[in-house]
Length: 161
Image (cartoon, rainbow, N blue to C red):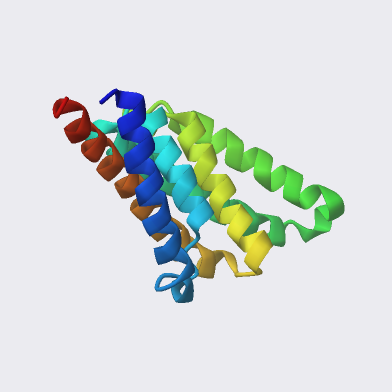
């Protein structure tokens, strides 16, 4: 079987399982399927395998923490009026880029995915930044693991032919 067909099968079936988990048992924990899918894509963006898994979890979690801090900072910059959020996001973006000097945080897009994921959860669900960070990081971990599993299954399916 070709790798593309194997990935289509493994990702398709696992997407079904992931969606059921996130809309069912994990929903009470505020975990989000869309955050998991972003992490799943980031896994492949980072080259897959164990390295892609680690890069995704570390960079996206770091980005989520920076995003959480940026939202909290925006609340403290109220005197800036309509500039509070833009200034806080600009500072957060600069932190993400500067942190990329560390090899473990060198995948800037994955850190940005994490930033956007926590900000999205805060804005969409109305959670406080501190209430949004744990479900975001858990969703990232689960999504990255689904990426790893889908790669493993696809590898086994391609070896059979």
